[in-house]
Amino acid sequence: MNEHEFECYKKAGQIASEVKKFIFDYVQSGMKLIDIARAIDSKIVELGGEWGFPVNLSIDKVAAHYTPDPSDDSVASGLLKVDFGVAIDGYIADTAISLDLTEEGRHKDMIDLNQKILNNITQKICKGTEVREVGNTAQDTLEEWNDKNDTSYSIIKSLSGHSLDKDTIHAGLTISNYRNENRRELSNMAFAIEPFVTTGVGDIYEGKGGGIYALQADEPVRDRDAREILRYVKEKFKSRPFCLRWLEGKGFNKLRYVLSMLVKQGILHEYPMLIEKSKAPVSQVENTFVVRGDEVVVSTA
Image (cartoon, rainbow, N blue to C red):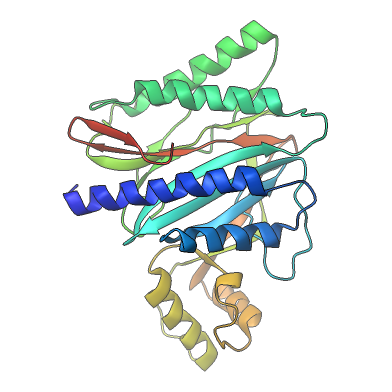
């Protein structure tokens, strides 16, 4: 990792940190998700960043991969996960918080546990830390909490942290949140750590599309409107995910139809919503780490 990359990751993280502060102050129960998404989009740009990927606004049993489109009337409620990315020259800071929007605060303990898991992992990260140490720490923290508090929280094992690269959210390395024997060192790279905690069985299934798209194949298309949309996406977002609201107001015709058509043709991939298998609520916290030489930066803290 060269100096330019390092500085871009750090700047993206600094902006993401400011956006998180804004979210904590701004979001309230009953607000329309589309209004929240647009406000976060605007804040990222206002602070000098680019969109790393569409903000995920996932409620209760939905763990990830939902972003509202302009016609969405859904409102914030329950246990809301806010997962978003900020890019500087394509180098991404990926971060997430969970907000308990219930009147009685019934998800507070789960969020506290989730944050404790992330905090304990953070203390372990240094030059030479192995992937397995992340999973072991997450599992140890969960088990100690359950034993001490007579609870039965679970980590969602199929959702993991990941390495980051330019214009790439998931860059090939999986960083599991459960015990494993992966001895790969987390050195000279940027990566996200994101434990998910639930009161359910700790597994997920794929639901319908959540409105987040990514280029999947670079093939010619005959439809002129589709060609124009694809050209814009490649120039503006490169290989980063995008969403319908980012294309609104750009003069495109048949926008919804074209996106649906390109998904059916396999040119675009629409990420499915990830839903907890027993329909139990899910919390998520996430930070981006940048390790270069002996220096460790939690860029989004």
